[in-house]
View 1 (tube, rainbow, N blue to C red):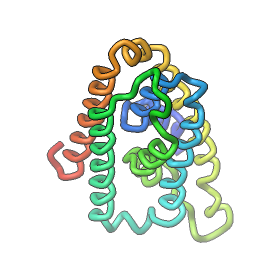
View 2: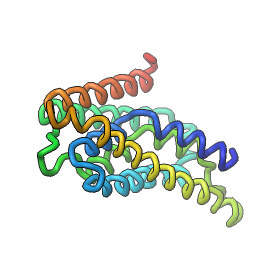
View 3: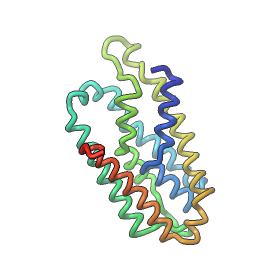
View 4: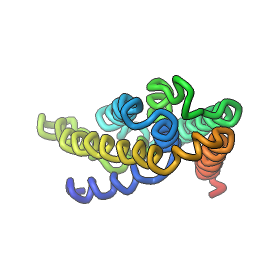
Length: 197
């Protein structure tokens, strides 16, 4: 896959709503863009934590291990449901300190199934023959990291611009809507993992 085709595919995938993007939008709405900027680094670090081992070590091994991929998807589902429960029970307030943490964004991104798609299907696996084959994924990882930063900034901005009023005027409704989005995503993920969807 060419770098331009890769960039387009990754851009579409990253723009798709999911658990990490929901957390970024919630933080943009409740804390504002400036206070939420460290979350961009957490997302990038989370993706790289998941993708680099896939590209350099696991890609050839996981092809023959569908149970491992299923386990990762189910763990992701449980994490997203936990996040939804937290948002439902303790909705964020635009006036509250804290909110979405770097650790929550990092963990959510590590468990994000998008990382599996990117690491196993979009970025070429590192070869074992020559140095060139070993380094083949590096330009893809660089482009990917740049796109993560750009898209994360868009999600923070969307939260700050579009959702802030709802988070300020009705934090309970805001938290419940965000939690419902996460539950829908978790059900979709679980359905695909066990073959219902």
